[in-house]
Image (cartoon, rainbow, N blue to C red; front, side):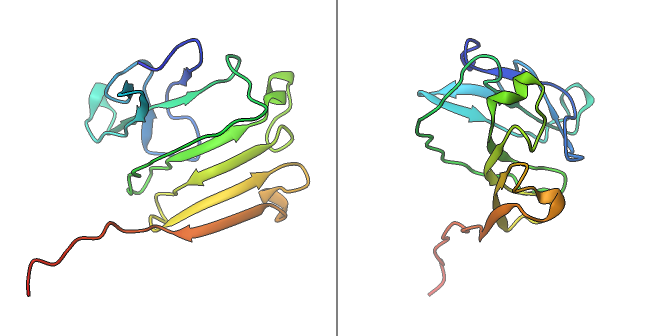
Length: 150
C-alpha cells in the first residue's frame, strides 16, 4: 500500500462527472510494486461500482517546494474516465479554492477525447473559466505493433 504518512485517499464519485468510483485502501486500485506507485483503474464492478480506481494526494501530509516527478503512465481510454496527474497549491489548506490556490495539470486524458493529453496552468489570472488559462495538448503516442504479414 502507498505510504500513509505521505498519501491520503479520496473516496466516491469526486469530480468532472467521472464514471470511476474512487476506492480507499484497496490494493487492486493503489499499491506499490518494486518501489513504484501503481494506480489502476479497473472495470470490475467491485461493491457494485462499474469502474473503480484510486485518487490519492499528499494534502496535509507533504509539501514540496522543489522536486522532480518521474511518471510512466498507461492510460485507460473509456468514456467517463479522466486519468490525471496534477499539483495543487498548498494554500488550499487556508481556504483558497481553485484556481486561486494554483493548479498545474501535468497530464489529463479526458475520456471523451481519448487521443489527446492535456496540460494546464490554473491561477486567478490564468483561469480556464475566463479563457486565459495556459495550456498545451499533444496527441497520444500509440504503441508500435509490428506487422506479421509480409
